[in-house]
Length: 289
Image (cartoon, rainbow, N blue to C red; front, side):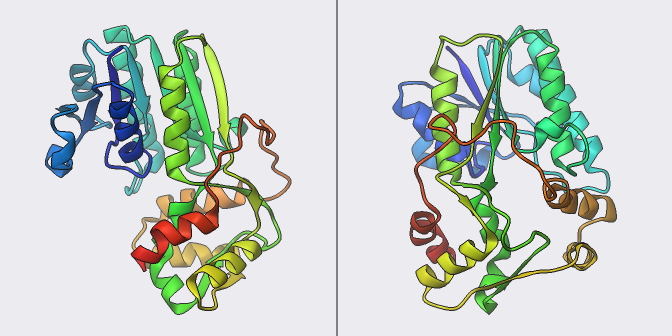
């Protein structure tokens, strides 16, 4: 089976690529920046330059491919929903033109709402488009990435993190490496057919208050988490350089999943992964700080 992997330098893709190599697969890596791949991988992978927002490039790069691990690229533009639509058009065209039989899509918890969850609505639209193709498609509904904490590295250094969520609201937190492990197993498993939804909830649901306690204990310094109003968070996103539409879409991922939202798939042995936040902080966040 010839497997293509998008965003191979990403938080999930870099782990997935190595897992597939260890499994005896020579994956085809689709990337805008082939020069950024590590030298140690080059003898074990194929590489094609392709922008996941470019329909023609994705179609050309995936000729002869049997399965794709697809990630909608993160948008930084003034119209993030248009970027998600472009990415959706690219993977749909690749599947149709190249008769790709299997897609494993990196989606998110909240995509089941379909509307009202900010940027996650873009992922929901990709899910719907892939479902309409009648192929074997698996949607990985992932929880909140541990690595999102790295985006707040300066705040962590000051000992104060802000969120628009209530501090006592539990949600799934997950290590990207664990998502990659699930993705590898789903890609290599030939027993499933048609549509599959696989939640990846991480090891346990955590509140932001618990996250603050874990960070304080593992970093050896006090980390205070404060809940702030939506408008204050929106202004912070604007101050960080986000265009207004993008700031609204990013904030919408929080507000859309805040009040009474329950994931479609409950926590179970199928959706629970092993890496704890404490372990990830020791292994990765400490080095980043």
